[in-house]
Image (cartoon, rainbow, N blue to C red; front, side, top):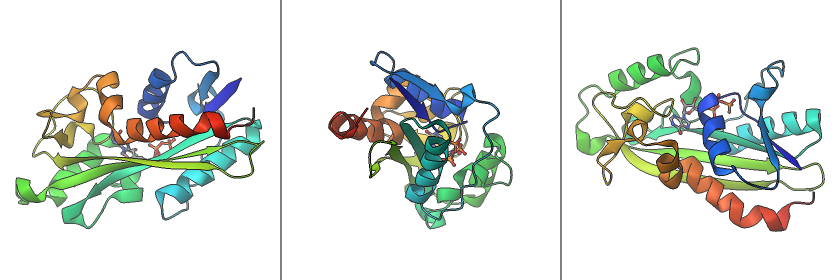
Length: 198
Ligand code: ITT
């Protein structure tokens, strides 16, 4: 049994591999297939983009596929960067994205810097007519400066008040326990055993 995670993002791949560590199936990601062409994410919602990615990969490999489309929604920016989180500052460059976010929020006080991470997972399988779709979120505050070296993307700026740390100061296990992606995966795990036809 094999499942492919339709991602080329090493940070996401690490988090998925960590939860699906000792299951009865083998987990691969697109990092195992470096020649797989770039998938154009033309949707306007996380669900649309996750569906595009899941189906592009399922059609190529004829295997069960999980795709994650995720992003950061900042209230003071009316939900931006949202589905454009990966390319907020142009090319996919985490440092530039974080710098742009800080500059857009320049002068905004702490109590107005609330944000959430969202992850929508689409699980598609050649033998199932309909996809399984789940969404997870986590709420936090955009810090005034980056802190921590773990994680990826906006993690160094995503401050969790209950923990007194940014997401980038958590280990991958700690992040999976509370993150948008971890929460979405927990929902998926409750449902997929009944849903999947191997
Ligand atoms: P794939 O499409 O190959 O999975 P991607 O990085 O392009 O990789 P998305 O289109 O879903 O994936 O963009 C998600 C972006 O949102 C990601 O690049 C980060 O900038 C941000 N993001 C999502 N989850 C995050 C997390 O757990 N921590 C920090 N930033 C995150």
